[in-house]
Image 1 (cartoon, one colour):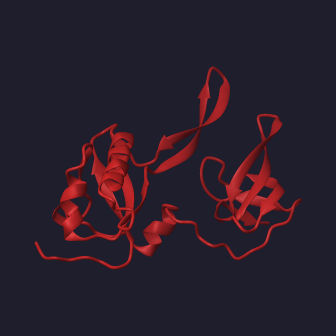
Image 2 (spheres, rainbow, N blue to C red):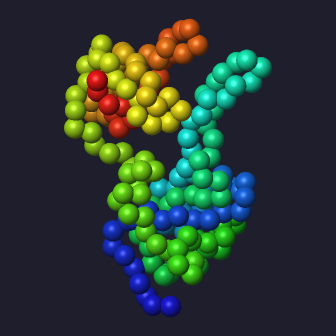
Image 3 (cartoon, helix red, strand yellow):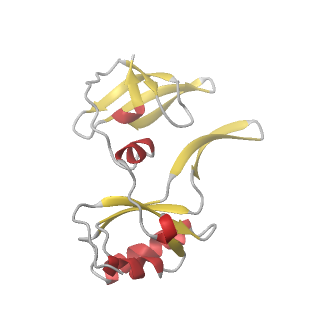
Length: 176
């Protein structure tokens, strides 16, 4: 093993046992805390998506794992930390050639929405926007509140005959 260590934090994919994503994330967070690794491991995400589920004629939005058996980790990788991560309960290893970590590309990070993308447009209360991702993709709604600093907006979505408030990131909408 070479003594490789990157200097910039990058996103990597970890494989977990089926159904152990939350346990693996929790165990990894404990490893970070116990090992004082906050300066090496910055974020751990279980990829999810919102889907519309119908049960007994009633529809509701439910959050589901979009990639079962995988979690994402943003870290400064080094061979010294490989053993610690791969031996954390619930994790089977890194996703990459021969189990060696392969950082995600900028394109992959954007597609999976792992990081907030700074959006260069302004929104005002009353503007109409189209939702560009998730279960409500292509839904047109009206902006009721804007928070330009956080790049978030509140909208009213007409669902099932009534207006439902939602809070969305600017990156999840496009201005009409």
